[in-house]
Structure formats: C-alpha cells, structure tokens
Length: 280
Image (cartoon, rainbow, N blue to C red):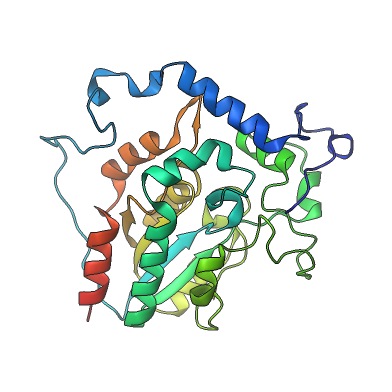
C-alpha cells in the first residue's frame, strides 16, 4: 500500500493525523451518520430510497444509441484505494460501494464490453512525488495527498505498484491488461483535461461513451462534464459508481441529481449490459 505523506515535507497541507488513515476516515463517516444524514432529510428525498428517480420528472427524456463502431466504455479510477476495503478511502466510500454493488457492476460492464469487442478505456488517477510539491490544493486534493492516495514512486517506474492502493482491482486486470484496453495517462484532479483520454478516443473514432467508475461526484461527474463539452454523447451507469459520505454531504446523492440534469442517458448496469450485448 502507498505510504502516507510526511507532512513535514509538504507544508502546504493542513495538519492531519495520517498515522491511522482509515481510522480518521471511519470517524468522519460515523460523524456524518450520527448527524442524522441531514443531506438526505429534505422533503425531496424523504423516501425509502433517497436515490430513486422522481415519479413525475420535469425534464425531457433523452437516450444514447449504442453502436459498436463508435461507442466506448470508459471507467474512471477502478483502483484499490477507492474500491477495496484495503484502500485508504474505504472508510468514507465503502458503504456506498457496497450499497450499489459497484465493484461487481464495474466488472460486469468490463466483461460485457470485452466479450462484444467494444472499445474500453481506463482513465486512472496517479500521483507521483513531484505532485506533492503543488503549492495550492482544494479540500479533497489535500486529503488525498495527506492519505497517500493513488501514490506511485514515479512516472517511469512500477516499483511498488503491484497491489498498492494505486493499482487496479485484481478482478479487473484480466480486462484492463489484455493489451487492447486504452489506459490513458493519469488525470490529476478530477476531469480528463490533463490526460490523453480525448485523444485516444478520437483516434479510435469514438463519439459515444458509457461512463462508470469512481467516484460519483468527483471524477465521474468531471469526466461527464468535459466529455459533453467536447461533443461526446455520454450515458452514465448509475450503479457502477459510488460516492463518499461525509458531514459535508452525500457525494452520490449530489452526483445522481446532476446526472439526471445533464447526462444524455442514465442507466443501470443491467440496462447498459443489455445495450452493449445488443450493439451492432
């Protein structure tokens, strides 16, 4: 597992106890639960399933037609630090990951896309030692750096990568490391503006994306925004993602609302798999 960063070497980070990384995250998650889930208590969400779609939506329906030649499955951050109990973020995302069966659902998408011969692209999140020299950061960036999340020893070495928090989930490696999957250069904050995902997709003549991965209101939503701005049609798979639950709010709830507003389509994994398998 990647080691927590030494605060003394990174004075830009706010003080945080990184000795017990998972313990810190678990305590914040429990604090959110103890607060009564205020973010979920509004009349609009006071139902048995706070993530259920409205019975009478106001926005017009839209959809994406999956065509094998020009549609890609794009998965953001399918990595141990987000999706495994061994990952440093599990204390705040684990409950959401388990609720939505996210790990298995991402696996189903990968398996289906590979079986059909669909283009698959991974947009990973890696941090190298030089990234810890940044002189300003947002709250989540500070937390990720402090926890050593997605840390690698350098851009030109895989030393210590295997099995670390930055590594891909073991059950996905048969699909990701098959020599055919596009593994984009790392995105550094949330969106794909700083990596080569768009170039890789355009070179494959892709203009439609089925989007899944971690985490819902951060990298998935940021990728959705940027891909839409660059002219792609994007369908988000709602149960192949998950979000953090903190006193600041439920990340998955924030994301699912915005997905309804802006995605070209919002599907379950069952629906996405059905469409992938039926694509021509």
